[in-house]
Length: 291
Figure 1 (cartoon, one colour):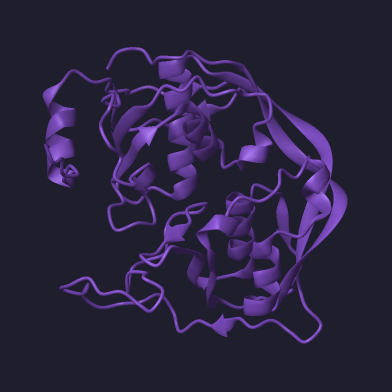
Figure 2 (cartoon, rainbow, N blue to C red; figure 1 turned 90 degrees about the horizontal axis):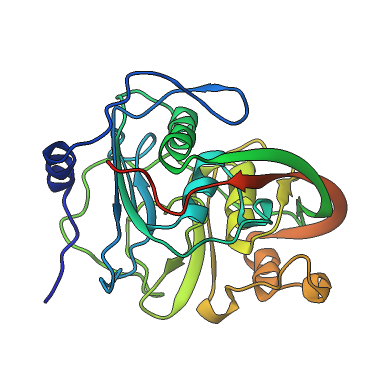
């Protein structure tokens, strides 16, 4: 039987139709901070055997076209923790995900910021999964994002696109959807041709470093010195998407994406030893408390 994605209206009706936690108090997290909470939050097991059709991860919330509804489809605990604490996978070294998947829907007050959303997700972890953790520093290889000698090949942005959405879906020469907004951080677009891309619109080089860091699973710091906003796309064959683990013996070998970064955007990665912040999970329940 063919399944269709749930609409926003359907999700809101489902949230209201079942008993949910309507948290009217602030939650104190493991770091001693007082955290804000979602207006309404629902966590359900993801149906076993249901195909994801490529849909997995967070969408909606502050900064998107649906700012008051945060959703995570087919979401595991690792994804939830990393989104809540704004971490790359390399910053969660001691946690082995139990392999349980959920569908999460939560309403958030209009005008909330992305940082407030993250703190609400932290509250959700504490309240529903009895989550505790602590931060540590770790010495590791850090990569500086730099311009190559002949200069970067970044296109100055004309600003975020405006106007009405296209009435039909069209594709460019590489099989990517035309006029689609860039995906959330860490998400790699895959076109019909089998090519992939990391893309940003009206973003800084610091935003680009963040996207690269999450996609390549390496700590990357913007050291370009550029202050502008740019439109960019790093296109590569999908098979090159998996880089060597930065802690492995292959970490000295540039990945194909790093080579293409220099060729297409005029940027390079320079490695050095540095300190990064990691999160050590002390306790988390495999399943959440009931809605």
